[in-house]
Every structure is written in structure tokens, then in C-alpha cells.
Length: 243
Image (cartoon, rainbow, N blue to C red; front, top):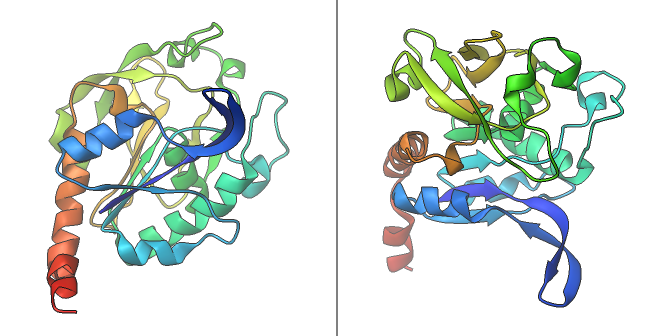
């Protein structure tokens, strides 16, 4: 049972404009193909951490920027935040890191992991010289690509080898990883592209979007780690069959 945190955005269903909790379908497909059962987790103003009791793993999806006040800074004019997502996701991540629940942070999700671990972010990469390869300009989302190198002994190096080309679309990045350990860097500017928690069975954050890549190695690794968690505490299906 793999939770996926949701976006909260204004959207349209046929002729109905509304605010919705939603997530790109690619996340659902990747979890399903990896053998997991996807469960969408909308943000709760009080964190709603009880939902983790029913999950074996958690994905914090991409989306809006983390509020700079969460890491002690004033906001850059280009920052676009979602206070509701911050309120809902930061407690989930803190509990997952504390309890050993398998965790994967994607783009914003990696930044949420960083802030939850006492780190800080580059608020707007276009202000950092030489970092233009991390996104493309234009009115619609089009991925850039660049190589990432991985640290020896890291979980990501186990999955991808010493180096891999990843997709890229982000205007923020990790400046200070806090208690997390950087394990991946853009080879052209040394910007942090991946982090891991050193004392956790599976807590990985990546700056790129693995849900939109052909390989599902990260999702397989997450589901495998979650399966071990489930086996350790018994199958809920077996439990409910006895009720």
C-alpha cells in the first residue's frame, strides 16, 4: 500500500470548475507496474499522520514550492507556494523518517524532505549562474535533460550505476541538505540532484521526475522496501480474513 501525496489545484471536469486533490496518472502507473497498490493522500491541515498506519510506503509528489518561512527565509518573488500541502506533507515526512516507513520524494518531494530535515533551498535557480539546464522556458512543461553522477555506496548508484541522464524541470534546488546526505549531483554544475537519509532503510529524494521516465527502478525499489515492511508486521489481508 503506497501512499502518493496529491496536488491541490483549481481544475475543470468537463464543464465544472472546481478545486481538486489530484495527481499525475504516471505516479499511479509506476506504482502499479512495480507491484504496489497506489493510495492517494490529500493534504490535511493538521498533518493527518494517522493515515501512515495504513501504508507500507509513501511518495511525496512534485508540485508547488515549499514556503520559505519553513526554513527561515523571506520568499523570492518567483516562489509559488501551497501552504496546505506544506501543512499536510511536512508532518508525514517527519513521521516517515522517524519510523522507518519507506519514503520517496520527487522534485518538490525531495525539497519537502530537505526542509523537514533542517535544510534550506535555492529559491530560484535562474538567479544562480550556470544552472539553466535544469528547466526549459515556455508556457508549457517540457523537460530538459542532463547527466547526474551518484555517490559510491549509495542506493541510487545501486539502481542506476555511476551516472545516468535524467529529465529535469524545476526552478528550485537543495542548497543545504540538513540531516540528509547528498548522493547525486548534476555533472555540469554540481547542483544536488538526490539525497538519502543515512539511518533509514529507504528514504530517497530525487530532483528529477522518475514517474515520467522509461525505467521504473526507483518505484521497484520503493515497493520492495515497502513489501519488507508489510511482511515484518503481517498481511492486513490475512488479518481482515479472520475478522
